[in-house]
Length: 149
Image 1: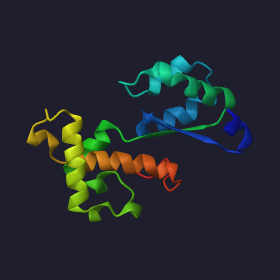
Image 2: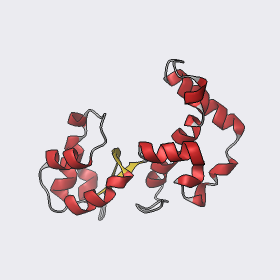
Image 3: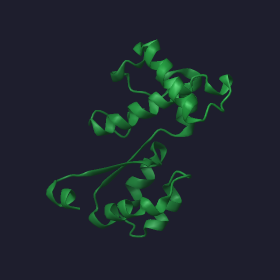
């Protein structure tokens, strides 16, 4: 709260909202005060929303910008089938990622799923996760914008 009051134009970036919902958030947040309404219309399923609603309510109360910073499952699927160019901005030169990094990411995904995924399921999941991580990091670094893809 203190940061919001000290900064002129703060932005709340949340990975709990898919980037496709940005237009809805841009239209709804200045007009609505009902956090449940915003969450029911724009939230990505699977999150424990009782932990995140206070942040959305803060955005509503203070009328600050909210950014939907998550690449959706559709985006990630596109990366897995068509490569990074399917959704990523070119700034990151993701085609130059080393095989060592991709291998480490693949291992982390495999272990993160308790070694229960088949080899077929793992194919390109490393690229999907890297794309997601880079997309969110771009907001933190202030490099990306809401319409970069």
